[in-house]
Image (cartoon, rainbow, N blue to C red; front, top):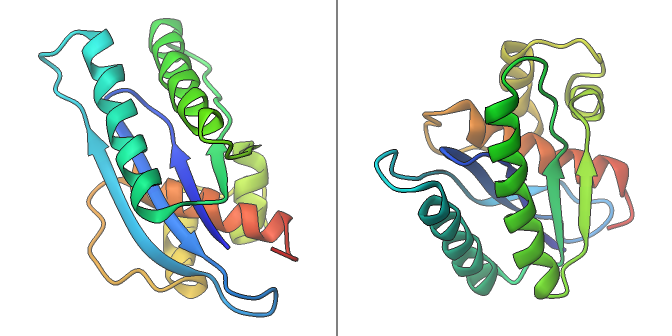
Length: 160
């Protein structure tokens, strides 16, 4: 089964495509990236850029599910609202392609990757290479986060 997993944002969007061939096989990373929008563009244009990128990736890989991180913000409400809008656009595009959406909280992701709900970002990123082969150098945490969300999907759906 191929899935698309996303760490939502409007400046940077972590995207990963993972595949698990059988319920007993290990997950394989087919694609990952941190898609960035242009800060000079309007917010609406940035949403359009994100939507176009997600549509292009869906068309190429034909995923059967979307795994996306639930939002957790404790400070900047303006940023939270814009990220929520980007997440809504991503979910709309995915659902319009009849791809089911699965959301995971930061706590669920931390437990799935490290076994500990209060793991740090460094603990998660250092654990990922033990769980899945990441062949390229990852520049932004958003990409690692997307990979972690995808692995969480398979941990929560072991028969996929």
